[in-house]
Length: 233
Image (tube, rainbow, N blue to C red; front, top):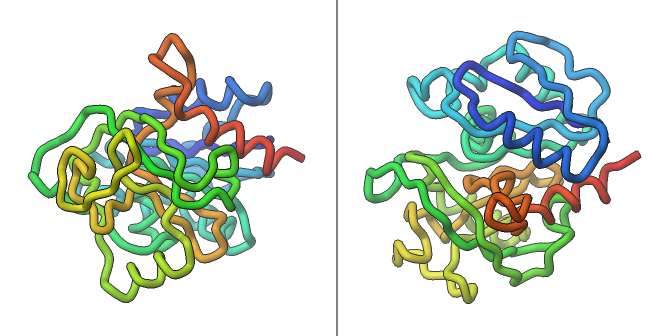
């Protein structure tokens, strides 16, 4: 599988992502600096976490206008698969490749903790290794993870099964108003969403940080294993 890993000024999770893909495929991702204008041959584009451009203006707003993002948009329009995690999710919403926006956490505090996610669909390359309703543990680290969208967009996401992950407790209980279940207060407890063709996925927590027993567990590994199964040529 050919992975293009996009790096912006302020990205800080690219090494974590490299480690995750090295666990599942012998071919390491190609790291692409944001000033480049060609992706080359890629099966998957990944936008990792961090603080692109220092989060000035809005998180991901400046990165969305980087030279490489024109090529990422063309890749998406041609049906390419894209994964954005944390700041990568923010960049995807600012680029209008995913709907909605990520705002300041409801309690206006930076959060660095573990959370639990409930899988809402297994019918995507990103979630195929799980069953709908499965719950897994994953770290999160963000100050702007409050997912929001207008009512029409939320209704569309729910009706079309485009919520990939939802914040929950360890037993899979979802409660939008309980910060123990929904730490950043996201609407509908949404932690990850999909594009209309289900080939672009953005999520706030970091599955790449739980891919080895030495890291505390392998709860995030199914995401990467599923991508290899779905996209390997």
